[in-house]
Structure formats: C-alpha cells, structure tokens
Amino acid sequence: MIRYEHLEALRNAILNYADIDSNTPESDNFGQYTVRSIYFDNFKLDYYYEKRAGVKLRKKIRIRSYNELSDYEDGNPQVFLEVKRKTDNFISKNRSTVDWKDLPALLDTGDIERYVHGNGSEKVYDEARRFFYYMKGKSLRPVVLIVYNREAFFSKFDPSFRISLDKNIRSMAFPQISDLFTAHGLNQSFYDFFVLEIKFSGAFPAWMADILFKFKYTREAVSKYKICLDFYKIWKTQNRAKLYSSYF
Image 1 (cartoon, one colour):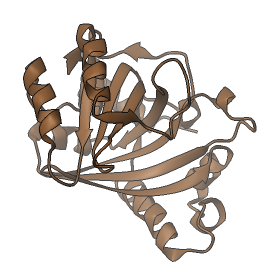
Image 2: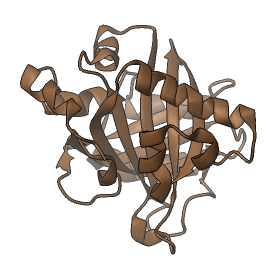
Image 3: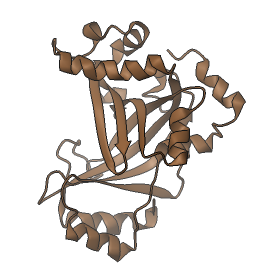
Image 4: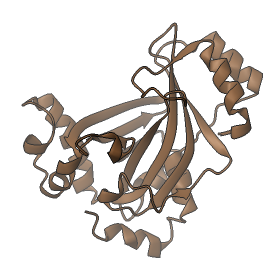
C-alpha cells in the first residue's frame, strides 16, 4: 500500500524499464482501465476467515468484468467466472466467459453448455464447472463488489513480468449481480493509498528491486477483499444475514 504522493515518481521510474499494457485503451491517463469484481462467500465467511488466518492454500470465487457499460456498443460485455487459488506465493486461476446479458440465466440454471463461451470445448466448460462446484456446494452469495482503476505495465525485457497500480479502490457490500457495472453506492475503502502489485513467473529483475529499495517499499500482504469487508464489519451476524437476500 503506497501513498498517492509517490504515484508520479513511481510511475516514471517504472516506465524506464516497462511499457504500458498494450491491451489497455489509449488515453491521457497511462492506459488506465476499470476493474470490477463481485466476490462470493458463504454465511460462515470461510474465504474471509481463511485470509485473516493466513491459510497457505486458499481461494476466491468471483465474477469480473471491465470498464463501463457505455464503453461497449452493444451494452453486452464479456464477464469472467473465476476461481483464484493462492498457495503460498503462487497464484493460479480458472476462468470462463459469459455474455453480461446471459449471466443471470447462467447463475440461475447452471446451463454451462448453453451460456458459457466454449464452442463445445470440454476443457473450457470444466473451467466453468469449477466455479459452480464452489458456488453451489458452499451456498455462496455475493458479499462485496470491488471497483478500482488500474494502470498496467509489462517489462521491456521479460513479458511475464507485470506491474499494476490499483487506484481509487471503492466497494459495495452485499451487491446484486446487476450491480457489477454500477457507479452508485460505492464507498472509498483505501482512502490515501493505492496498491502496487507485482506478478512474475521467472527471476525477479534487479531494476525492480532497485526501485523498491529507492522508495523504501517492502513486501506486504494486501487483500482488497479483506480490507473492503473489514470496512463493512462483515463479521457481525446481522450483516452476514444479508448474504441470503435475492441477488439477481
């Protein structure tokens, strides 16, 4: 977690060694785009408490999409069903895709072959089945919507080395599925901080280590999911009960 006063200097240091993610839209704001995720949990808040306890093998179940509905000509963006796993420092993800307008029907019926973009591929459908395995098996419900603006960069020397700056982090507790693209009812959850996130599969480059040393940054566990839920005092029984309201 880094104070905004460091943002410009940090960005300039990164740009000496990394390029802006070419998949982000061109703009005057360094290819910034918006990430939108609805996270699921159960009445016992298993995933929340696993994070609090520092369990080494844990997961998050979420749906994710990007930007605003107005950015899509047909108003029907792709939405991703994700099972994100973390084992110590290693992260893996199962991901499948559905049209936004088909999402309520998919969640209601579980008809993966009809709604998931798979072109008949059992491998793709298996990705979606993993999502439903947890959602149905643990009686999961939407617990929090988290929205933030992201600047993403890739190393000029190693395309697997990725840096993101996640800013303006805001959230909504107990959202409806239809709230995924909302601009209303969101609360600032990180205030004076943004999050520097680094993902890599090979060696950690010396230039990044030098930047971290220069700014006196140290590695720490930062969970947007946990911090946003703490903001709403999610552990209170009367709050957990809201998980089981209708969510379509």
